[in-house]
Image (cartoon, rainbow, N blue to C red; front, top):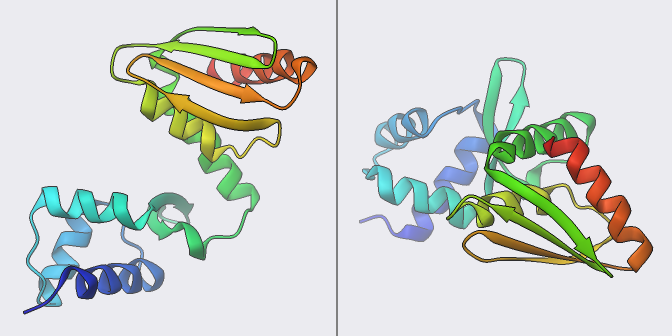
Length: 155
């Protein structure tokens, strides 16, 4: 019987050595390798392993965050990730060294994760609730720049 750890190792090996673009593709390859998983289990595994989709010559594929180097492609993917959540953003404002982003209900965590992936050096951290994100910025003056940058990306 295969354990969760065995399955995780196999998934990491597969995404490192094959172009796997969808959960369905991953499920099929795992099945060929003798691993039977449900869609819910596979989604949880992808989240727990921190897999991300990166651009490849044939579209997008899964990759482990530990195995990708920051490149223009990765930066492009991060911006694409942010672009995919911009429809949920309702308002961006700031005061002092705090930026507040209001989103649709239930969307704050997704938007905050996309912002975190940008790895903006000015940010000390992000906190997401249900529909509100707090960004803590290093200095007051930087907060206004962060807002302008985010408005450009999300606008």
